[in-house]
Length: 394
Image (cartoon, rainbow, N blue to C red; front, side, top):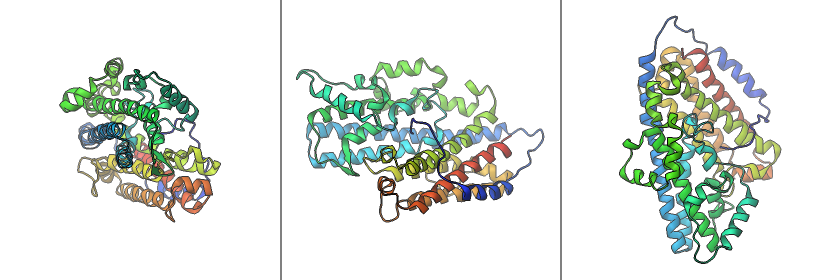
């Protein structure tokens, strides 16, 4: 997620006309005095256990694969090992982007701020180069540790710093210096701990594997960070049971699903796609060193689909899903949401028409029609989820 001001800059006249039609067809009359707490509880259980916790588990495991690949690269810096490390980065990136529909929990900036710590963007390239110089000037017997790196400013660690060290112009680099290899392994350790922290905070330490527990206990600063923010310990149980900050209000808990979906839909369209294209700021294209941008944005929409369907990678929503509940209250709204999710994915892919990366699209100011269509679709999707909160959840 970007850490600069979000701005809706792209003209959205077409989107606004479409939204007028969508909203007018999606009104739903609340049922006076209805109590859906048990239904909401079942949806939240499916959402946490079938979507959120598995996504963070996969992300933590993929981060550990990154660690293995980058340690192997440092020991033997061959082109084959660089390619393997780059592939491990892309794989871990999938699960991070597929988690962005639920940034309202422990990962958010008002909580443990894992988001800011591992996905700060744009890069502070001058600071990264200065850090590399410091590493290069270290004494021979000095070793940069992951624990040191975890304490650094967010702008010099995380996914995008490791991306910068591994990629150029969408391809794995030909070689890395000794300083870059030291930096890469230390920053990867920091990334591993943040990914594991997200998983443990949602699932609870007692519910993760022995391997994950051991990694979680490698760095006492990680444990202390969670312990000092105890409202976010075992957060999955808190959401499922509407405890903690929800204070028994299941309506507030269930609204997190649609709020989280609306937020990331708006961000993808207005901030990740429209802003750099409109302002012709190629350096503000997220993941531009790896040219992974369009895949990132697509996976953000996949995170919405998973959240709405109540499971990962489903073609049909689960019985206890937000989609099923919306369908029971307003079938047309549910149909519109599902169709618009797929529409967003297809239109994001279309931005790359001509086998172009988003970096090239912004740099060369091409495929503007496709960019506009994707921005509009994301805005429409965000509005549909706002309709769920306004007209369905009660």
